[in-house]
Image 1 (cartoon, rainbow, N blue to C red):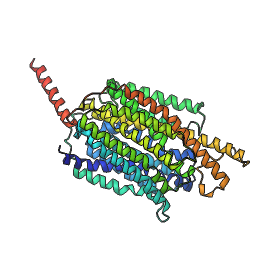
Image 2 (tube, rainbow, N blue to C red; image 1 turned 135 degrees about the vertical axis):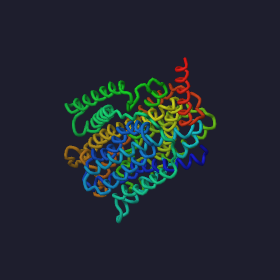
Image 3 (cartoon, rainbow, N blue to C red; image 1 turned 60 degrees about the vertical axis):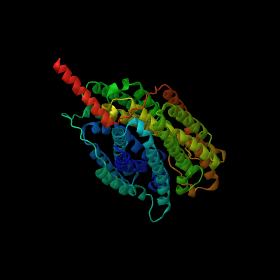
Image 4 (cartoon, one colour; image 1 turned 180 degrees about the vertical axis):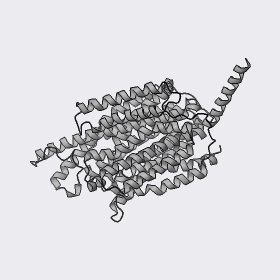
Length: 520
C-alpha cells in the first residue's frame, strides 16, 4: 500500500482510538465534581475509573480472537456502537451505580478498539515502516489525552453544560469514526471453513480475571486484606484461571493460544507491558485529583497542568518512531524509555502540596518521554517476531496484560490512597485539636474543597499531597522491573513486509508443502 492509502485507511482507526482515549480522559478532571454531585465515596471514585479498565481488560482477548474469525471492520464499528450506548447511559446517570455500569459498557467498546486498531495496523504496514506511523499514534494519544481533561474541565466549569456533557461529547466522534471506517478501510476477507469460538474458555478467562481484579479493588476498603472475602475471591479467581488454562490447552480455537508464550520476545514484552500498565496508569490516574484537591486548582487548570507529560510522550514517540524506521534498530529505545520512565516516577514520588509547578512539569515531562519511547515499541517488537497468522493473538495478549496492569495498579493504588489519606487527615485533625470522626473523611468521601474552613483545607491538601507521592514511590519498583525485563529482549531485524503479505507467503508455503506431500 502507498503512504496515501495507508493514511486513508488509518483515518477511521485514529478516530476510533481518539474516542477510546477520550472516554477515559474527558472525565478525569470531572470526577471530583461528579462524585460530589452524586454523593459518591472515595472507593466509588476508584470504581468509576476501574470499571472501564476492568471491562476493557477482560474483553480485549475476546475481541482479538473474534478478529481472526470475522470481519475486522464490522467488529470495529460494533465496538464504537457500544461506546455510544455507554456514553448515553453515563450522561443520563442519576446515581453512581448506573454511572459505573455505563463505564463497563464503554470499557467493552474500548476493548475492541484497543485490540483491533493495532491488529489492523500490523496487517497493512510492515514493521520496518510502522515506526514512522507511531508518531501519528502518539499525536492522537497526545491530543486525546490533553484535549480530554481540558474539555472536561471547561464543561464542568460551564454552568449551562455541566459534567454530563463529558460523556455526550464523545458520541459525535464515535459516529464519525464509524462513517470513516466504512468509507476508507478496505481489508481482504479472511475465509475460514470453520469459525469456532471457545465460549467456555472465554467465560473462564473473564470470570477469573474479574474475580481477582474485584478483590484488589475492594480489599482494604470494603474488607480486610486477610479475610474470608479475600480467600473466596482469590481462590475462585485462581481456580477459574487454572480451568481456563486446561481448556485453552485442549481446544482447537483458544482465545489466548498458550503456545504463543514459547516465543521469548512475546513473553518478555508481555511481562514488560503488564509492569508498564501498573506503573503508568496506576500512578498517573490520580494526578488530576492531586491537582484539584491538593493544589486547589480548577478542573480546567488541572487539565492544562498535565500538558508537559503529554508533550513529552508525543515528542519522544514521534522521534523514536522516525529513528527506528530509518535505522531498523529498536532495542536501545526500549531500554532508554524504561530508564527514563523509572527516573520520572522516582522524581514524582518527591512531590507534596507545596511543590512548584516548574518542578512538577519537569518531572511529568521526564515520565512522558520514557513512556513514549517504551509503550508502543513493545508492541512493535512482539509483532515483528511472530508469524502473520499469530499477529492478532500477540497484539491482543500485549494489550490485555497492559490493560490488566493498569486495572491492578489503579485498584491497588486507589485503596492505598484512600487509606493513606484517611490516616494523614486523622493525624492532622488530631494535631489541630479538631474532631476527626475516626476516619478523617478520607475514606468515606471525596472532599469538596470550596466548603472547607481554612485549617481543615490545609490538612486535606497535605494529606492528598503525601498520599499521591506515595503512589509514585510504590510504582517506581514496577518500572525498574520493566527495565530489567526489557534488557533481556533479543533484538531482531525489522521485517519489510506487511502482515497481509506475510500471511499470503505463509499460505503459499503451506500449499506448496501440501502438494509436495501429496506428490511423494
